[in-house]
Image 1 (cartoon, one colour):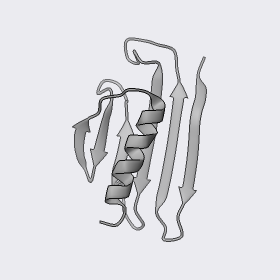
Image 2 (cartoon, one colour; image 1 turned 90 degrees about the vertical axis):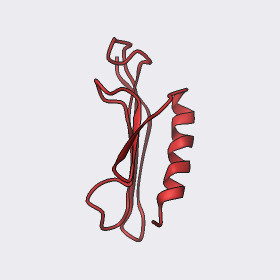
Image 3 (cartoon, one colour; image 1 turned 180 degrees about the horizontal axis):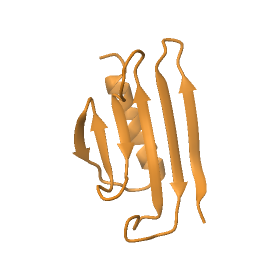
Image 4 (cartoon, rainbow, N blue to C red; image 1 turned 120 degrees about the vertical axis):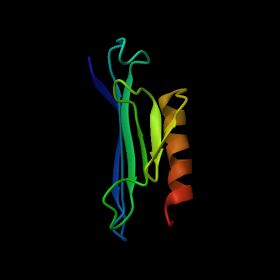
Length: 94
């Protein structure tokens, strides 16, 4: 059974968008942690996210910062949000 663990969306006054969705999903070879997520920060006027965390198959846990992909070490979904917020804060006004 799929269950939403966390859902958040904010449209900022400057036109930037932050959206986070984290699902609890059945454990499978594609999702061994039983988690699926997509967290994105799109600055005003940008065509793509400045910060994006996701774990789609087959790549698994990873993040994109200004178009560059990095591995991400998943601990739990609360730490995921914390890490995303740190990267977002570091890249908000670049």
